Length: 616
Ligand code: M6R
Image (cartoon, rainbow, N blue to C red; front, top):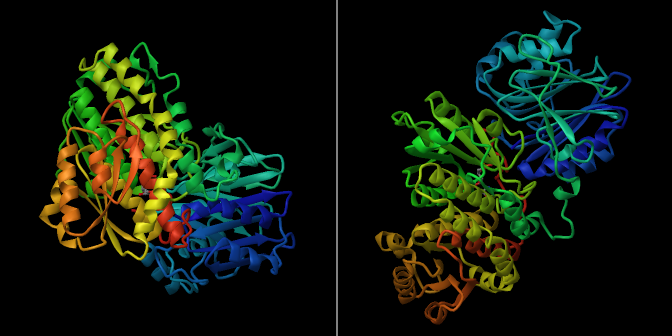
């Protein structure tokens, strides 16, 4: 979703702003813009619908001299993605410029009020009310004080915002604030920076400051940052995040695209996650804020997530129920938030799974669960993300920056993280012995090599991708935990190839989706060597009888499946059925990528999607 950047310092602002916006492209956007304050005290800007590359072209012929400025990538919510609706937005005088990520829920009331008072609003956006509110504050109660004017304006807002503001009258100052939407700031020798996340800052600093809701940060040209809270009280020691990965981690490093890179990084990500986790308590999970007795008392787990992270939740349910014998419900955050009758016990534990840690629906659900008295544990990838900060405990999966919109390495690492939680719970409540934990942990340690083996067989996915050429739809099937792999495979294919794919538990096919089958229709069947193998083979036969072309994901040596299916994506023998989803999904990630590339699409930035969905 929208990306915000800001800079004030000794360098030309436009250069870093444009680079920063390029780095934020992965968040998903449809238009972009920058605004710079010149030393002579004027604003100069360009904005356009489309890519940052187009903005760069326009910027190269515009007069964007100045060492203070803001930039934005917009993911349209209110108003079409047009040049006019692109940010920055200006006040009536053209001297205040604002970029915004979030939604101003009461914008219609504010807009009416502002227009009645004579303000001239030019766009269809909710965001545009902000510069006009600041204009009023600067002309009245906060005269001469931009930070205060921003604070005053925010008092009128309802909803969520991350704002960066410049004003031609303050050419050496940038003011930022947030509520609900992410924003970090950094102080360096050559200036002060602001950004929606740490990605654009990784090559200028290793330490960034976090803003709490309603904090207002004033960034100055000497690189200093001063932060005040909602009441104007100075915050001397803001919390900080250390960027513990090299800026090169967010570059392609020789790979054709980020998705390819991130798929290939999965074995190392799992190794990192498992490293040092086996110890005195079975699995060491100090991140949990519950004592062993409290863990032992947990009688229900509610997992809440969206998209791919929701699919992790489905796999986690199998592991927790099997190993810790605790009943688990898995909820879509967007649905959970509006389920008025949700029931919890005194010992319900809530687990939120969110790669970005900023998904608005998931954050709202976590807050609701905490409000209901539940202990909330977050499994996330982004250090210092809102989910991690607001939860009672957070486990970082350490997968490194995931840039491609389609989640791959975070998916598998989150699954393994949820297995660690299942083992910790099972050990605490006595359903798993130390020996069993050790045995299961050793099984998890086989995953990286199994993944490497699948990666070495990527030619199988490339070959199978031909079967999707000129097709409009496909069906993904699997049983039990493999149905989750089918869901994830179908989601990956839809996201990046724009080809419809439907996923079903294989046994449910005959209750409806079987009507889709016709000669040549592609069916992907996840049919590993497990306790439901024969049942799934029967479903494959039902597909073939109707002329479908079946691509199977099967275990090495499965002659029966090899004879039946057009293509087989082979996985090595896995030590346990719960290891399979972490390994088999790599084939479906690769398959989706090959299909999308074959169709000529940008696999990293699929249309309409955002990496971090910060609106409900
Ligand atoms: O950051 P989160 O894990 O909370 O994101 C949830 C979904 O938006 C995300 O998984 C989405 O489905 C991805 N594009 C999947 O590839």
